[in-house]
Image 1 (cartoon, each protein chain N blue to C red):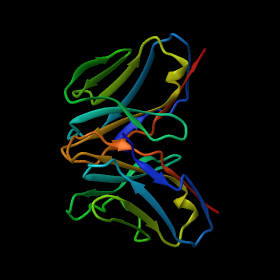
Image 2: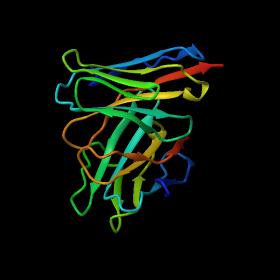
Image 3: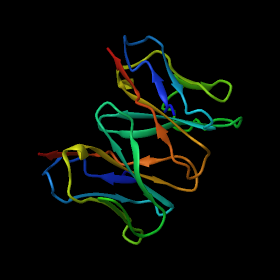
Length: 114
Length: 110
C-alpha cells in the first residue's frame, strides 16, 4: 500500500516568509509525528498527534511553528516568519498507535531559507 | 550532554567486511532500542528493534543491547554496497517520542 507522502519535496523561501508543509499519513494510522533533521542536530521530535487527543507540542522550537491535523488524517506544519536556522529536512511519520508502534517515515520536505 | 551519542563517522569499508555501529545513552528510562537506515534523500526506515538486553539477529544484521553499560550496537556481516547509507540509532521510553542519535554515514566500497 501507499506509504507516508509529503509535499512539497523541496521548498526554497526567503527569510521572513511563511511556509506550509503537508503530510499524508498511511491510511488507518491514528498517530502522526513531525520531526526535523538538520546538520549537526540530527533528528528532533517536533509534535505528535494521536486520534482526537490534544497534540503534544513540546518539541516545537518556537511559537513561529504550528501544526494541525484535519479529520484525523492530513497534517500541515506551518512555519511563520522563517529564519535561516529553520533550514532543514522536515520529516513526517505515522503509526498505528502510540507506545511502541513502528513509525513509518515519509521522504521529507527539504526547506531552504535564503 | 545529549541523551544519545553516536559517532557520525564517516565510515568506509570494503565489500564483505563486518561493520560495527555503536551508540551510548545516558537515560536509563529508555526501554526500546531501534536502528534505522536512511538512504540519501529518503526517510528513515526501521531495520531492527529490541526491548531487552542481549542480541537479536535478522539475516546479516545483529542488534546488541547492554543496558548495564547503556550501550547498543549494530553489526552488519558480509557488508554490501547496497548497505551504504546513514544508520541512526533511536530509543524510546514508554511513550512515543523517539530520541535519535545523529547517525553514522557508512560507505561500502565494491
